[in-house]
Amino acid sequence: MKKLVLGVMMVMAMAAQAQNDAIAKFFSKYQNDESFSQVNVSGKMFSMMANLDSEKPEDKALFTAISKIKGLKILSKTETRNSRDLYKEAMAMIPTNDFEELMTIRDKDKDMRFFTKESGGKISELVMVMAGNEEFVLMTLFGEIDLKEMSKIGRAVNIDGLNNLEKIKDKDKNKKK
Image 1: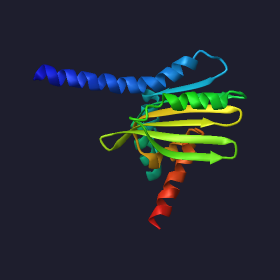
Image 2 (image 1 turned 90 degrees about the horizontal axis):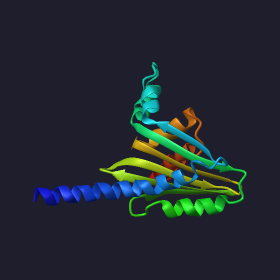
Image 3 (image 1 turned 60 degrees about the vertical axis):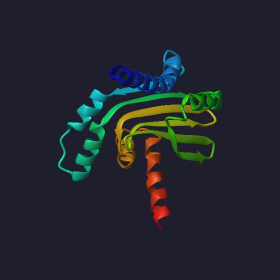
Image 4 (image 1 turned 120 degrees about the vertical axis):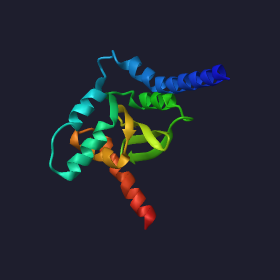
């Protein structure tokens, strides 16, 4: 029985890893392509940011949210003619059985989609895919994620796309009315 339980746990862990690997494969496919810009922020950087001192209660809440982030990866390409192809390729890499679509935004020439991965009622990963006529962005944020705080973090560190999460709060307010 112990072997069976251990075997099932290993298979589940490998399946979860394989699903995370799908997005990682997209990043690794283009990481050496100099036409792409890359940002990779480790959990250590977020924990260092969380240790900053502040007297303001809203800053302390922000630092608490930041401390739960384990990493951020952004892959982007500007002035490109194949942004829509990259968008389709990235969308095909997102495992739909593991990620739930959170929000879709279409603004003029830009399409943006947000996906979340939940575990135990908490968001463990947020993925954003965006394409415009001449630009493409894929972002993944992982750790323990509080969407209410993410737009504040996005503004604080100037991450385009995360500031759009404010629209989720606006949608929730409209639903309650």
